[in-house]
Length: 138
Image (tube, rainbow, N blue to C red; front, side):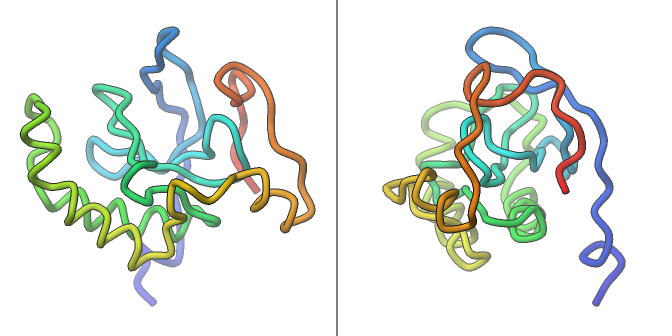
């Protein structure tokens, strides 16, 4: 197992949300970040400059390792520091869905509440479901 897979480096990053910037614990992969989802115990991939999430591309994961592995592949698809338009997203959408699915991404129609309960947890509450200034996930 490579060092990149064996150890995840967590850091505090700012993620753009509809209500402004929010500081969260995340694993940074270039311009992408892996963090606990805002409203569930699942992990998400977010584009840091825009706050765009990958949930509709099966980009919700039960573990941060799965999400980080998918983010490393997604990061190679394009220059994520460049401006992103709707046409760009349409062009890479199928590749993102395939990458996320290959790494265990949860389809968007699967309810996070069911996943949380199956893991013996209650769904998380807070701003957009994410406690402000959340610490490093376990």
